[in-house]
Amino acid sequence: MNRSLPAFSMLLALAAPGFAQAPTLAIGNPAPALQVEAWLKGSPVPAFEKGKVYVVEFWATWCGPCRASIPHLTELQAKYPDLRVVGVNVFEKYNEETRAKVQAFVDAQGPKMSYTVAYDGKAGAMANAYMKAAQQPGIPTAFIVDRQGLVTFIGYPLTMDEPLAQVMKGTYTVAMGKALQDKEEAERLQEQKRMAPMNDFMGLMRKKDYTHAYEAARAILTGDLKDDPGVLNAIAWSLVDPKAPLPAPDLDLALKAGVHACEVTSYKEAGILDTLARVYFVRGDKAKAVDFESKAIALAPAAEAADMQVALKEYQAAK
Image (cartoon, rainbow, N blue to C red):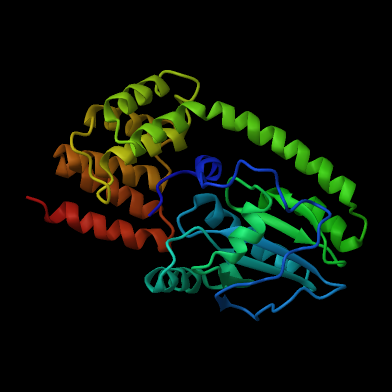
């Protein structure tokens, strides 16, 4: 389960090779063909039809902001009956197990995810044709395809309402789309600069240079990102993640980050409470682990609460 908050996830979702070249898919270009391994929900869209408008949105099950945008995409699909929203699952470890997991996730969304959903698959054809070709560094990312089959918007799904409304009316131009993309790109680069210390920390963790990684994390806790709950939560979780155990995690650092993440979110974010519960468990404080996991479950959506119930049983069974 992804314990990061949306703002943090969106910015650090993707650090894949091949994202430093000039884009080959830009606003005003014909939309690439839809090539997916499987259609998971809704009527398949074999090809773009002239005269119709499409939103092609890229997401993953581990991405917090992707999950947050699902209800909004459903609202847009309901608002514009002649619009086709297509959510394409990308950037997961492609195998039958993952495909089954994605299908289960989609099924669990029920009416909250009332639009067409597809699975990119092992070849990654859609990720290559859209995300990498457009040099988009994070998900969720939406592409609006106008009635002429041209890409007129590339960006965050929650910022596309006005452009989409104008595309539906036929008043949105390629020039307007380019201007908006330039503005969002400038904002993204500014945020990327702000997040540079966190990127450094994550890079050191991937290199297993834990001494310098912990130094970088301690600096983050006193710097400009010290009150960013997504950053704090990610630091804490990286130190206690049971799927990636560390040889000698700095549990004092994990506790400091986890507690402050809860403080700045007023102890009302399920994922952050879940992380703090894990920190306490790894530190050997079973009572607090059970207490915070129980609080997390009470606040969590059903899809996330199931994983938390497993963790709670683990804490309760510990001696």
